[in-house]
Image (cartoon, rainbow over the protein chains, first blue to last red):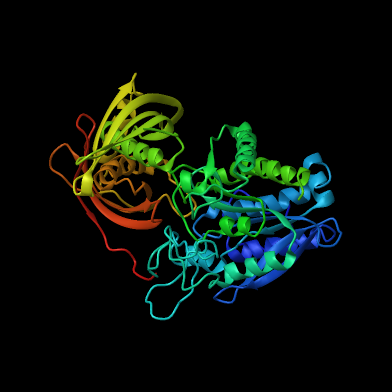
Length: 312
Length: 219
């Protein structure tokens, strides 16, 4: 592998290792010190740093948008898209009207590799690994599903108490340092207005709740935003998405990220399931990375724009 | 009871119907996949099970512009002890796969050594052109395994071919021994499955033997 010298020569149309992505982040910051900074919000179970990129034009504790990718490590198109989003923000922050207006008033936080231990494991041992790599006492099995470990309906139906299961919720809420780091960040920041967690696959845009069939109070608005975001996404390559609440669209799932963030008061909480619908699934061909990222970005801009226009 | 087409009960039944249909009509030159659910309704039949009526759109994996409409009926039996019943009607014609099938058939027949391959697609989603029909054949054959093992609480997809080995035969059929990974979307589990697949251009795809394999326990 060649040493990466610039984010302009980085190959966005291929899948990268953790080291390569972390090197990319440092370069992006070095090339754009007035816009981008890197924060370490914690450490993983295996002591890897958890990095978040902050895109800001200044100010203090501005209202913010949070985007995370790679919380489930096998969903490789998501981390790859996260890298592309980072570069896109840097490229467009002055000339794209919509993005410029967002950054005029708001900050963007982007965690590209939300589960670095799992990600390394998918490169070295098991391409289909989903969970974290924690070992909790009394079990032969490794890992907790980081999207069942949040304090929203924790331990209820829609997660498993079996440590060997892919949807194991963990011994208690926020037991996973990868999750706790974000929880602490969100609480300490106190001014996040939109929260988007990105997964693959299925081509869905989802809003809360997953843990209960009670609709969220803001259901109507979230549904309308979703409709608009999906239309924007489709406009690029015709990729068709469905949208709805988690519990009606895929399944009941407890302890999920955006259920917690919504209950914290972050009204605009969404989850994406990116390409495809199952033909390649987790093994999405690399040549689809950039088209996926491009179309998803259009949907993200709709959400960010809406948050900007409806600050609360 | 009418279901919103985006409701998970509809999409699970639709995925099952598509898998079964793909198995019955597919070949190495023709893989079918679910494009959209247009309508869905569900009926609870006392003492029998749950019956779904579906209107689906299917696409040809080798030609995304080629789609067909189909109606399907799915009956999940109470207790899930027997596989669901699936019946379907395809409106119009499926694309002709004869040429692609014959090319693949002749290529394999003329191989000096039996075909062996693994990890299709690979970690980066690559499938070499020579392996496309092998991938499609697995896709079609996995439709059988999916059909036989589906319930209202499952949604299976073929995740990857871990290993495939051609088995020499003295007759005109081609035989492949596959170890595949199935992704079950409700539990999110990755399940290894072995299947023996028979194929002949004129006789369709047949899974003659299949068995669920033990998963990696802790890894």
